[in-house]
Length: 160
Image (cartoon, rainbow, N blue to C red; front, side):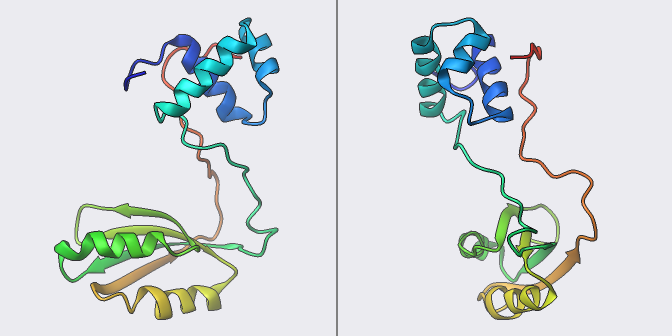
């Protein structure tokens, strides 16, 4: 399967799995009115093609003690060092997202920690000392109206 070659059935499979990754192959096949072996083959092809990256459980971070979300803009001294900084940031477990951005800052990251003390430790002890980091600017999230990793799959939305 080449990039952009997903057909309508593939898109319906992607939508269904995105809504409920735990759906059984048999249930998905019933909803699509297809043979289970055909659905299984399509899911394997979608995985091999990279259209499905992973099957993950969405956890409740607050219930697990990580209730503070912050976005941190990171200015780097030299653009040439950005790659190394990005790789270092990506290794930190509290860092959920690492984005290389246009403009004065080199990176925008999303972090989730238990509280302000943990955020301070992360910034002071693990991000600040990175060789190319010049400065950081932090925005603490007070409340979240929407947070999702669901991607709007293109094409007609025929429910599965």
